[in-house]
Amino acid sequence: MLLAAMGRLAAAHPDLDLVIAGPDEEGLQTQLEAQAKRLGVDGRVHWTGMLVGDLKWGAFYAAEAFVLPSHQENFGVAVVEALACGVPVLISDKVNIWPEIVQAQAGIVNEDTAEGTYRSMATLLAMDPEERARMVANGLACFHARYEMNGAARVLDGLF
Image (cartoon, rainbow, N blue to C red; front, side, top):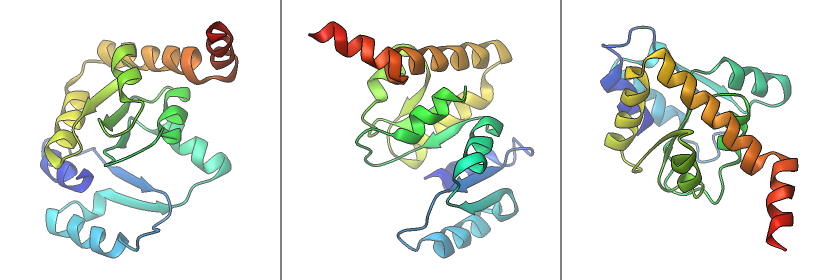
């Protein structure tokens, strides 16, 4: 889905690159590399494998967006990590924290399809700097209110 979206956006956005991070537990990288080549974006897709420590945080802070068009995520820890780093999140409605992201206007949510992924990415790319800055600020506020340890403890304390 992500590569298909990248293929559709590539010509109109010549500076757009895609970093795919994380372990290849399913052994799909070779197949995905072939897809990127067929789409003509293979030189703009970078496969890092698992990133940990400073490399992971550096990648988050350097990112223009974090895209997770997942078919199913119980929570989405990486989504919260991206919010904490001030990175707009583009997720599917199968990442179970999507209602909080929508409510906080902290990211873009679409269905878990190639078309939904494309719409999310195209929407972000069409935003002016003020809109992006507002989304970043909303994402940071969402992180601090809902997911940062002290904020989460206050919420839990209010439940009892």
